[in-house]
Length: 223
Image 1: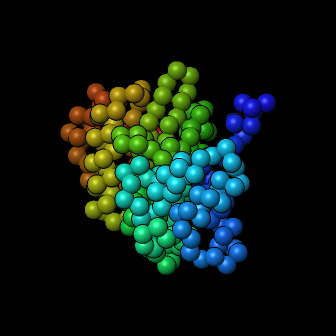
Image 2: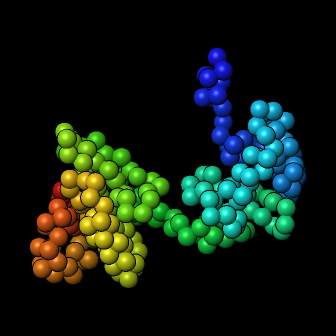
């Protein structure tokens, strides 16, 4: 019974988020660390206030903690001054990437990611988006039989300079991360045309393949 209850318990960040939102709805726009930790402890006395207080730095958008969460869903507090917080509001406090360096996914990139996932699944792959990928990790991981494929997607909705940077990162990641059988780099057709044949040939020993996408009524690609 105890193990089941432990398994079903909310993580500290979720409990703190629930408390912060409740305080906000009650008209308390700002709150202290002590208030947050104490209220969360009241909800679940099995949590120590010390561990809850530590968690506050991890869920605060403008915290200087190196252990701060990367997942946007877990970043919900904004520190106003020492020990005083409010709920994070991007319109009031600024976009998330200003504080974390995490770029928000554009609508165009989301569309391309979805279409790549659909095409991979149509070809018999089990494909999943790697939403919070660490360094050198692909955007999509696809498996079929015993084969594992890493897929990097270059956003066609950003400027050419940003596309070049993403391309360089994808190529470097493909060469350094050797945990996949095949490496696909999905990129806009205009960018693909700028890649010389000698670069394409030099990447073949690494099993790196470029997949250009063409914008029509929808993005089309040939895997």
